[in-house]
Image (cartoon, rainbow over all chains, first blue to last red; front, top):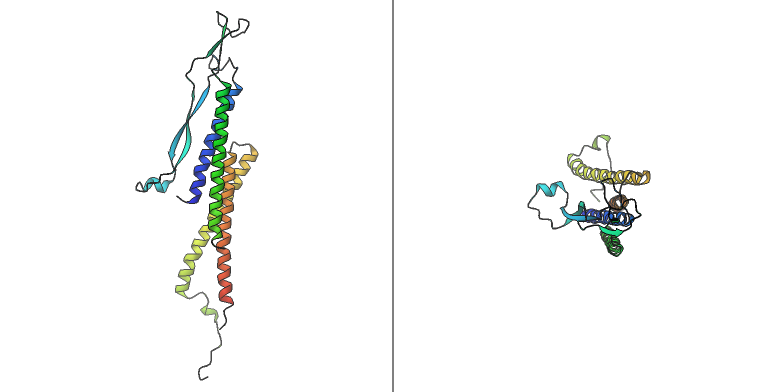
Length: 144
Length: 97
């Protein structure tokens, strides 16, 4: 792997973290949503990350080349399996016959923690890009 | 002083007919051309991605920035190599006999 490969790796992580932050934003935006196209309340979404062999054809051909570095990608965005929160609101149009409304299982504290974690991870990977850039620049300075 | 230095005479037929230098020079020139094409490719890629971001075609901002960085660094590398070649040429050019 060359130095530009490191940029690709960090880039994949930036993309994944951005998507994670996006999902958190979606969860927070829909914290009170009781109607969805699929019916029922909004379900909290979770991202699943997966390590991915660095997508380089020459490496794929040369299976002997054991490159430990691997990029990350979002394998899936799945709904949280926890049950919805039932709140007693008889006047609500989406209330069931007993007067309870199913609300999404979105916990603001959990979402904020997730968001912070995603933002920090993004920062981390941006710093990695910066570091790689500095390394390349320093290599170029060797020629001066 | 029985053997004075002969004056330099380059006949038109002498230029570009040296097979060895043409082969070596050609190889290096090919490498250089290839590298320059890669730099150009990186710049084209960066331009496309930035245009996509600005047009709102769903390209990732960080991918565009990384593409721009790559183009910049490739260009700097090319410039360094070019500076070295010019420097070598000037060194040879300033040789005193």
